[in-house]
Length: 335
Image (tube, rainbow, N blue to C red; front, side):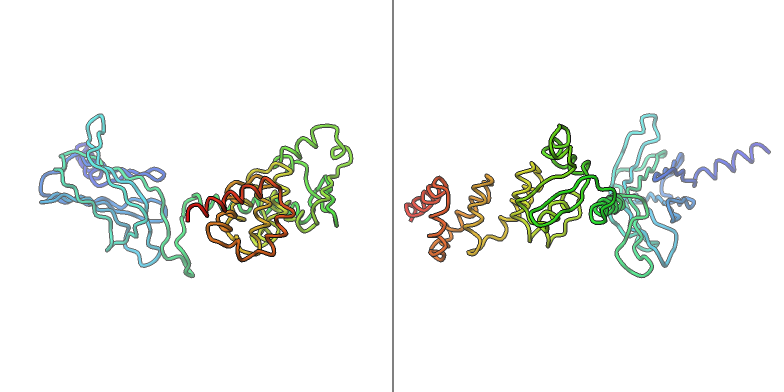
């Protein structure tokens, strides 16, 4: 009686795939030549899966989900073939990413080397996506992943933005040249070392709970705060770039400074090039300065803005004018 039970357990173990979390493992302890074996179904996430192994002229391993007309998986996984020796040495390795799997379009891994009599098939599922979600739309992962984390971070930023726009427990008032807005010391101090210093020492800003930003209109000041709180819209950024550059330089916010620098470099034209060149000089933006000079000299646009250029010569710093004329002389010598 015991022998029959042992034999039954042994037969069951030949087809059983062990699973835990995102891992599946099939131990094959006796696989004779010229044969085929298919596993029992095993569950990973919302699907039941099968493995099969066949040894013929070319050995192959297959992985496929149970027959289903809906919600076919798009799988990203690593599959390995290991020896059953104590060191579990890997004999071969294959990796598949973003592959749609079905009972007819399964994963087939052809193995050139001879299969041993004892081996282990080890699968690590990296991600599983539903290919045909109800109502259409793009495939989405059924596991918490980076995209879900990004959505969570976006929700957190939205909540932080609401603290500003709805005035939730503000504890400091910012006075612009034409209006005022409430804000939070902790947020300002975390984003700017200048603000942090204001609130750390016995300065007027700490005692009166106010900050005067009289060199910015209220709309630009709001855009500045929206950036610090993580909810500045693109059109607002584009509208107030120069004011934001000034604020970034004044309050030592390096990421905003670089964002403005890169953006101002992307849309230089005849109407703004001289103004951009002045700002590049004032705020020490080397790439913007070089881009403006190349636009004026290398592309010859300096000849199309003679009236504006005359006004520029009267107001620009003499060192900047000198550098520009050196660019002109170098270009003439290269002709």
